[in-house]
Length: 173
Image (cartoon, rainbow, N blue to C red; front, side, top):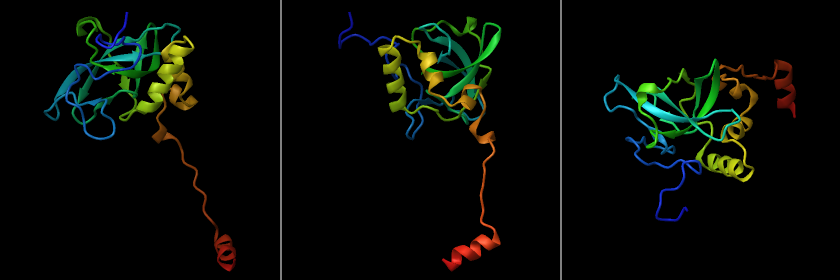
């Protein structure tokens, strides 16, 4: 039975238990893996994947000090014989297995989280309320291009500009 004196279950909300040195700024759920720049450290991340299972999966992520890992960031991970886009849900979970048997994250897709803490709380509540896997709920909340693993910065931006005739007409008004 869950009461205020016990630790909350992991599937409710991520908590900063056992957190490494956190970065400053609005995202307190970021971790800097190493204090020495250039050194690579291994962080265990718990990832919510778009699979019909009500559980999260642990992976190893090699990071350096220049690129912090944040809860809510997208990662590309191996799952069976395919590569899936998942969302980092917890950093360095205390109940994870040792890093020896874990698969490695293929790629960190986002340096900043795609879901802020308020939206993560809402999506977690919706998954619990509707008894639906969290990975499916998080994936459904993403735009189609982000679900495929594409980066927002690689998309073409459409820019409109007034022609000389349009500028003259606008100045006349």
